[in-house]
Length: 246
Image (tube, rainbow, N blue to C red; front, side, top):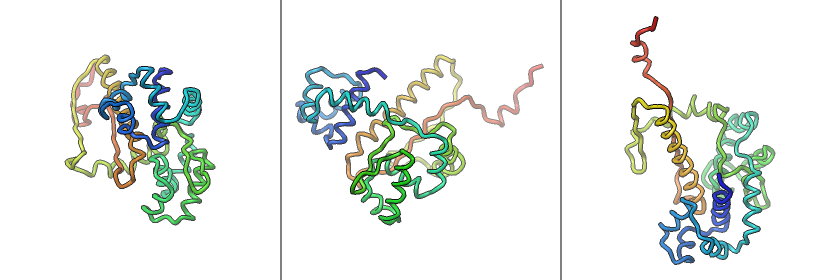
């Protein structure tokens, strides 16, 4: 990521932290909300507009640079040991996912069968794991970066492959806002690389939209999961019919 792109991401994080929506930025700049979203998505700013947005957020460029540095020092992944402890306790895993989704303490205890005392204990465990910082009045501060992901083939991803995988696909994917398609083909190395690059951008866009929506009330957000995958694969029934080369 370029320095300018990272700076824009830091600005987006600051706007979310201060409850400033794209609609509010659009009104401040005299632009449409769609244009502002496109501007942030493409990371295409004039210095004048950047200055106006900083003015709206009451932040100086120096503060933005410090916020950028703070984000760079945050964890993008946990260790296998940290993931093992989280996945070993169902409620701890739930609270960790809630924290990632910017769900507050009050929202957690109001939504799930977890008492206030138990929720505090679980958050303290996540604090000890350096996943969050539990602040006064049970405020939750994430210590992982916006680019955080679970370890590839780590304890949590293996849990998904072994258990959650079946639950995820127990659907016709025919409801509103659901979609699934399976496409088979034969691609060159160059085409495969291009598709992988595009899928990575889709995953990044999903994460950015999640970050954009964290300021919304919990009732206006719902848990969504996107699975992006591509691999060299042939149906075993077909592979068994291949001629064995001599």
